[in-house]
Length: 220
Image 1 (cartoon, helix red, strand yellow):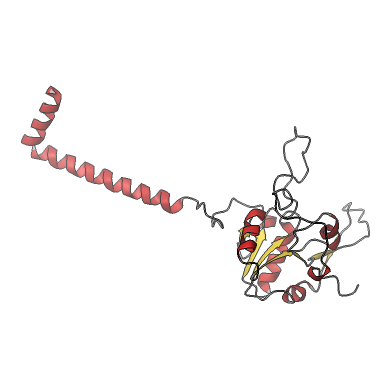
Image 2 (cartoon, helix red, strand yellow; image 1 turned 90 degrees about the horizontal axis):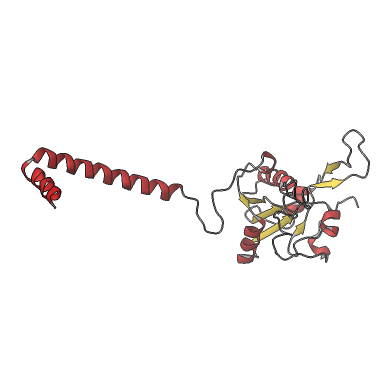
């Protein structure tokens, strides 16, 4: 109490000390307001369709910069199935034998070539020359398109081509149908696509085929 009385006496009889105290309080309060506003504005929103996304590998980035996860894509489609379309750009073989989302259109951006490339040690692919025209058969340029492939690479290519063709609302499903690979060497699942993706997220998934949802090559 003695120290408190001394402090009050100093404030009462020393107007300079009182003025300095008030200025210090004012500056502290301004700093508090500024920091609070800063954290509110820069915090990542927690609603569906977040605008802040983790950094993506270059091969998954698109010119439109619109991205969703498989789970977010399903929620967007479920909320407006008449105006939101899911486009699966994998090969016909992947769509048939790996499985697919039951509401997804299969319009391959690349076709598999069954001629072994000894230098690259793989079967190469060739572009689908009718990709854009086939998408335009099922969607308007004003529709919202959610594009998927195996894990987000080919779908990014497709988004960029669609953007050049005048489509504005095209999202890349960044984890694709099969998801990213497990990168833990000690895991028995290392190297397998089990981390995320449509197939691993408990979303509707089927091997049954609706031929009306498939756009096959025009020359077959």
